[in-house]
Length: 157
Image (cartoon, helix red, strand yellow):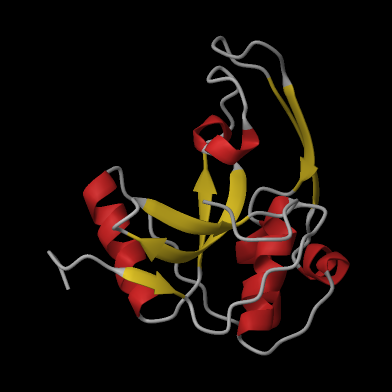
């Protein structure tokens, strides 16, 4: 597959807007596989309640959050479902893994740094790498991925 330009949308993937990025991404993925959960059920079954106050030297203001760190792992563990987490510092390896899964019709939940999502229009200083979206397609001719993001009805580029 390497060297061949790909345009592929994951067959039968449906995105619905939600309230919280990770719980709506998980809901979309579980629905893709035929399991219907509300976003609230995802949050509860994933032991989602938590608290974080984070203020770093490079941050213009603190981040306050109310979600457990490993919602996806907790959810899958509590449901007895396996989950595979891929981590790499290599952009090439990450992209090839993503490309392979999309080609196999597997939607991929990823963490992203929000100012790099052009459709959000955030200033480049507003870094937050904990935002979760689902990649539901790739068009290498256009140089875009199709993203299901919680607040949007349609896939974003």
